[in-house]
Structures are given as C-alpha cells and as structure tokens.
Length: 349
Ligand SMILES: NC(=O)c1ccc[n+]([C@@H]2O[C@H](COP(=O)([O-])OP(=O)(O)OC[C@H]3O[C@@H](n4cnc5c(N)ncnc54)[C@H](O)[C@@H]3O)[C@@H](O)[C@H]2O)c1
Image 1: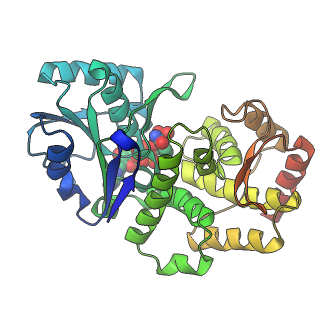
Image 2 (image 1 turned 120 degrees about the vertical axis):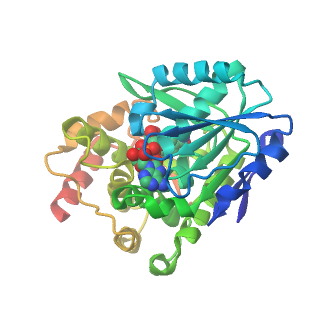
Image 3 (image 1 turned 120 degrees about the horizontal axis):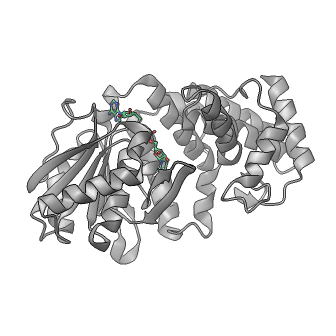
C-alpha cells in the first residue's frame, strides 16, 4: 500500500505491507537519482535477521550503532558523520535507517546535519517506528538531561514499513506499538469490535494514513499535528516516573495506553463526552491487550507537577480531549479536576 505525505517539494511515499523493504532500490533511484553510495545505519542485533537483506542498488555500507535508546546521543551523531566522511558520502548520496525509532531518529538527525542535509530513506522495523517515529520528519537525539532535546525537522525521501520485520519483534515491543495504534484507532473513531479482525497490515496502514494526513496539513506542529499527542500528557508523566525507578517498568506505548484511558475520563468529568466514550476507550484498549492501570505509588501531585513542566504544555495543564467539536487541544484545565480524575482512575484499577 502506498500512502502519500503531501508536502509539496518535500512530499514522499510511505510504502506499507509485507515485502515493502524490496522497494528500497526503486525509491532511491527515483528520489536520489545521482546517488552512488548508501550508508545503512542500523543497531546491534538487527544485522543477520532474515529480513535484513536490504538492497539499495548502490555501493552500500552498513554502520552499526548501539542498541535502543543509547544510540540516540550526540556522540553517536559525531561517530556517524565521521563514518560518512570516511565513506566519501556526498550531498547526492543517501543514508538509510534500518531499525526501531531510536535508529530512525538518530539516522534522520545525522542525515539532517551532515553536509547541512543529505537524503534519508527510513526502513522502520518496530511497530512504533512504522506507525509513528519514521514518519513526519521529526529527528533527534537525547542529552543526559533529557530526551529529544536536540533535533531537526528533516523529511525522508521515502519510508518502507515492512511488516515482515514485525515477525521477530518481542511481544513487549509490539505492545508498545499497539499503544500508538490504539490512539490512532480512537482518533479515527473506529468501532472497538473491529480491532480483533484487523490484520497487522491493516493496523499499520490505518496509523500511517492518519499520521500522513495530519503531517501533510501541519508539518511543524503548529496546529492539528498536536492531536497526535492524544493520551501523551499523562502518558509522558507516568513514563517519566516509571523510568526513574525502573527502566523496564513501562514502555512508551504502555504509558500512552494509560494516558488514553485517563483522557477519556477527564473529557467525561469536564462534561465533554458521555459515559459511552469512556466505555469505547476501555473496549479498544482491552482489545489491543493494553493495561490501563495507573501504576502503584504515583501520586496525583507528582504527576500534575510533571505535566505542568511538559515542554508542549507551556506551564499549563494541557490535554488533547474529545468533545462536541471533535478532538482538540484543551489548555488551562483546573488542577483540582485533574487531581480528582487521577484519584478516581486509580481507585478503579
Ligand atoms: N521522531 C518521532 O516522531 C518519534 C515518534 C515516536 C517515537 N520516537 C522515538 O522512538 C524511540 C522508540 O522507538 P522503538 O519503540 O522502536 O524502540 P527502539 O528503537 O529502542 O527499539 C526497541 C528494541 O527493538 C529492537 N528491534 C528493532 N526492530 C526489531 C525487530 N524487527 N525484531 C526484533 N527486535 C527489533 C531494537 O534493537 C531495540 O532493542 C524513542 O527514542 C522515541 O523518542 C520518535
């Protein structure tokens, strides 16, 4: 399936489905016709997988970076750029990111800054990468003081979401992806009963379609793109508290699922939606096998303090909420209401 991200001269296609990676050489030939060399950035543990047979049609070189979040560092950007120089990578050449969101964020950022920008094609291999990280052109790395603090918008030349790669993905990583897919399912107002009959290909295509449509209208997140943060305000806060005490406690998408359940309850408490909306959210999260329990020992004061510091909240309590006019960004939500809904949510679990 081909889905367009419609951004004028920076427009590109996302190809989804089984075997999508086989379009790599054709996409590069079309989008970077003068390229001769491809630097394939991937992480430890991925080279040698049965789907790791990427063919660029060029003189290609694989560069391996550390696994997972540790790849997203300024040191890794420097390492990559130095390797690009050693390969003689020119402005006409391409970088290819093959891996999870951490790899595509890093490869995309290195491509954005090397020689002030070279083309990148993304081949995301996790569900999070396929439905979220690799699409939309946000790239970046972490600093020791926080995640994603250095980055750039750099749209790829193309994205290939091959569902064959998902076959080797551990269950926990799949579930994390389902948190983002559930968000898309809810934003699209799909019937909860449809989840169980949807194939993985359908779920990737649905989520990519939603994100591609929104990014096409609002590349830089000055408006509609913020809707993609549905479930993320509380989700991020819960994720941060969990991360500090045990890095394995919650994956990002698992935290988003909790945030989605909470957002429905907050919208209900504010009189924006009826009880049926809360039930529909719970049914969707259950169908994806996502837990929506607030983890133990997270106080509402602690979570509210973090949400007020959220870089997208501008020191206010800001949520994406459903309502009579559809999903929208709602700012200035009263802390006492948020606190009460968190406490109710906790007592339900
Ligand atoms: N740029 C964006 O818009 C955006 C959006 C969402 C998330 N992100 C970023 O994405 C990152 C999270 O991405 P993620 O959840 O993909 O995690 P990840 O990249 O850390 O990958 C998770 C694990 O899965 C392994 N893996 C990858 N593909 C595999 C496969 N096919 N089979 C088996 N194992 C495989 C990886 O080696 C890693 O150990 C975060 O850094 C987040 O900030 C970026």
